[in-house]
Length: 620
Image 1: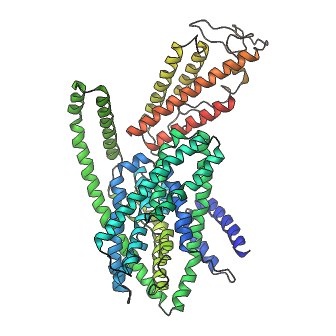
Image 2: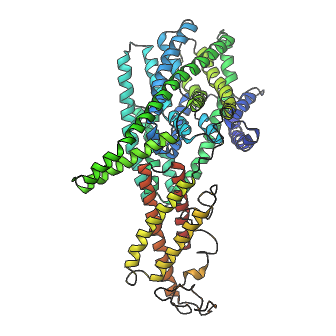
Image 3: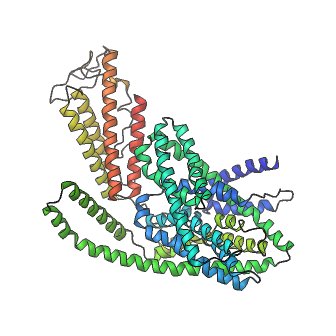
């Protein structure tokens, strides 16, 4: 009963903190950690002894999967070198350097155990991504931090497993590296298979609730076999999430994607909040365990603070090298751009098969888009400072520390050091990160582009015209020509509205690209009446189409159309509108594969098409 009351109170606390945190301008995870610490001081509160597998196997797979599903894969690909460096190379370097530091500072522990503790405190926490997103920093910084938090948990836990094994038997460095590579490859392969099956099963399930239920078990379906084979279950869950997010627009219905987004948002809110509450709640108990072992909690505090400073210094050194590499990459891209005209000329005069030439042209366009992205959103010293200061530790560090074997020398002492690093960096770096961003002057951006918005409208209009031109050729035999004309006028009107909309009006407000849900247009039942049915005026070939239910002079004709004719008109209109929406979506997905638009702009346009499709189908 005590645990049930704690669970209910915990959820209510998470909701309250989430609602109030924006007013305090303090990140919700930081407040939840503080609430957890205060709750643990209340007399009579029960001891919560959750095993580390509850977080590592029960909480992390769905959280990482959900983050991976929403991860913009275009930005992930472009900065994969930086992301993989931060999440693998930096984790390994930090683990080894900190391992020597702990071996020197903590008496009586072997070097392998010091490296294991170094691996425990090496992975960053995703709370940094939440903070920087709310501050309006560059999307590139968000993508790098998000990608790092997805992968570094897995690399740290694999290294931790190898280091713990090395405390019992002799393990070579080459053997550890080989185990790491094999673990990642096997996990990635399992994740690819599970992600593809997830999409196909949910495509066959024509029910949004059932589709979301399948998504709830997908991360565990990827995690469990990978762990059984000795691979990284977290890498498998992340890979499955990336595959699912990449193919969701193509395989899943709009209703499925919207339901998944809403339900997973709730799951993430509760699980993340519970983890941070638990981190704070367990701190006092860990301090008591250290005192019971006759060790000095103050010494553990000092070692934890030294380790936190070393972590920041190591990260700063690595990010400095990362910025230097980014500058070289940008200069190399400019050099490549200078040679593109000659390459395009060779393609124009090539006698290779048309299919190969088109493939080469697409690769050139994608390369140009990548070069433009790196030039438009550079990584300078200000962005580097944010990347360094956003490297706080958190729940994964606490959970990983508890996986140390029970017979580990000075285990409570090592756990307290990990707690100090995690909670200290959360409060110091996480609490001051908004101030750092404001001082650097790189926050508060909207990252909207009027030119990009106009190009998206043009792209969608062209895709619509292709469908309508084909329908016009079949007019009379398959399509009522007045339906084709009506759909064309609607698209032109929506496109003109989008062109005239203010820059801060995003898609989905009734003026966005493809928006079709404004009141007074399709919402009227009279619009489903066939032009030319009894009680309506029949349009001539080039003249304007009269609104069904009106006479040629615009006066209302009260004679209703026949039910059969009205149904046929509505069916044809709905079918043609859905074909136009599908063509627009295919054009946007093709643009996404080329990388010619930002992920945020493309996602906004795709969201509008989802709303259009649902609205059109519901009126049917």
